[in-house]
Image 1: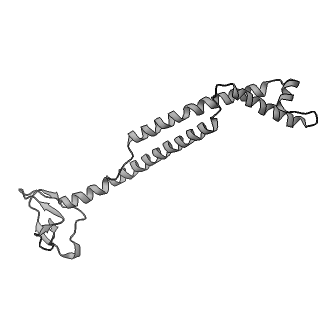
Image 2: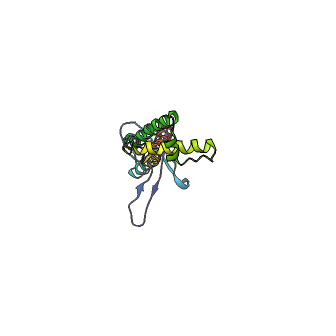
Image 3: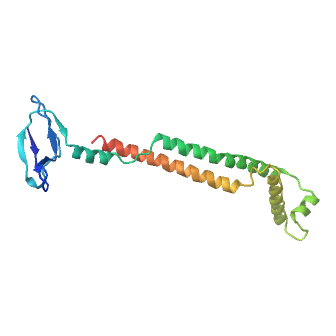
Length: 184
């Protein structure tokens, strides 16, 4: 079996071996698939010993694999951000659901109807809608502020959930890519 080697020289530089540097030892050597001389200027030599990749070649190989990968630490950070963002949303949702249940089951007096802005001339469905909205507004005002910022906390939780989802998708994609890349 023979290994193709080639040499190149730069302006005023000593001749350098580009593809591999060979450390000769007693009869050990393996062919490296895909290493060929550019422009067909190869010389052949029998395999005579152990060999290492040229440092310049090692650098380009490592650079191809050394891009920034998503780490489990980054996933943990995104999960923590998500959990922190959901506190306000979960609390607000719980209070809003409780308010919806209370307002839906409540019996409304004439004073409640007047406070909600109902009049005797409007349709019953319109008055019921006003009663429900008034009940929600007053119930939410008395929940200690848990639902006051509900829309903002819901938006923040959704944004953090998307960020975590994107990080997990990126992690899965990179894992699949690496399984293919490092096996070839």
